[in-house]
Image 1 (cartoon, one colour):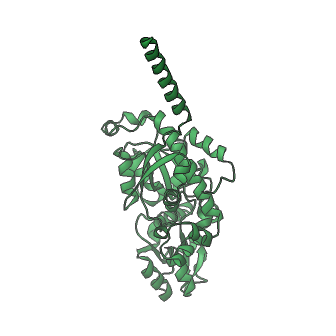
Image 2 (tube, rainbow, N blue to C red):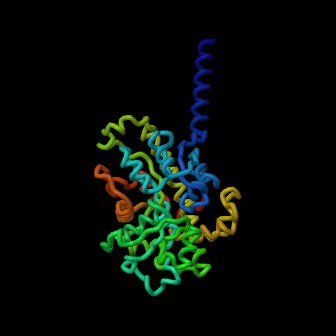
Amino acid sequence: MTGFGSVWSAVWVVAVLAAQLATAPPEPREVVVSVGGPPTDPAYLPVHAAAALGTFEAEGLRVTLRRVRHPTAALEALRDAEVDVAVTSADQAVRGGWGRGLPVQVLLAHTGAPAAMFLVSTRHVGRVGRIEDLPGKRVGIPGPGTTGHLFLSALLAERRIEAWRVELLSFGGATLVARLDSGNLAAAIVEEPWATRALAQGAAEILFDFRQPEVVARYLGGPFYEVVSVARAPETAEKGKKEAKAEPPAKDRAILEPALTAFARAVIRVQHWLAATPAAEVVARLPADLVGDPERFVTRLQSAQRAYVPGGDATAQGLATTLRVLRAGSPWPATLKVTPEALREPAFITAARAALGPSPAPP
């Protein structure tokens, strides 16, 4: 009887444990994300906001955010297998990823237009009204390799205007505004908040408002994805390269895919909310450490809301435009071969987006 009782007790214990396991909530999935920009930059805000609002947890995901100083560092962390996702610039995803033997895929596009405007000095209005008027003029950019530089190079190339025919000068935002005001610069691509300040003080007028996706599409052929979330692509022929073999191993793809799906769902929900919600209501929901000065936050967000890609989907046309702009801005290595199809999101992200529908639940 004792032996039978012991067996029965053991069976009972196993049954109880099985029942507990069946009813216990699943352990949250985990993902580590490097973020190459601060929440003060609207393009990077969705990821910071998803963490602050608990949207990742609501999707059953435990996220560790690693804030780094620059998009380059965000991509390097992915290449070194220190993180699972990098929120970085499209330029770094291509040059720092594909260009150095690490194929990546775009999980999400955050913005389809940059926070910048092409302005003409009020002293040159009437003489500069289109790109064809720029040869022989002084034109300002925020710096070599910046989005403003890339856009100007692409606009000139589209019209077959040699870059040497335009006198390019690189300055910080305040100096660009001052030189437009004095007429020292005929035109300039100016980033926010300096572009709005230039308009407010009457230093310049708008030539092209690149903050509007439809303007980018009209003059460059499609959206430009300045900031994207990327993950390692599945095994490809590129992984046979010597430099790729030296990389640390990443997480098993079968384990990582559900976590990446939850990451995408959370960020899509936040991004849709940021694009559609009055900025003052966003301020009321977000913690003070993300908002900073409320008035400045509202101004920044209002200027960027139309640039958000609400569903996060990077289209083939948009990726083709992005690659074309990146090529125009600086020398393109002959060995760097990447196509829009290779950068497109994996199928499980497409399915996750479809499941959320056109109006995802707010965070």
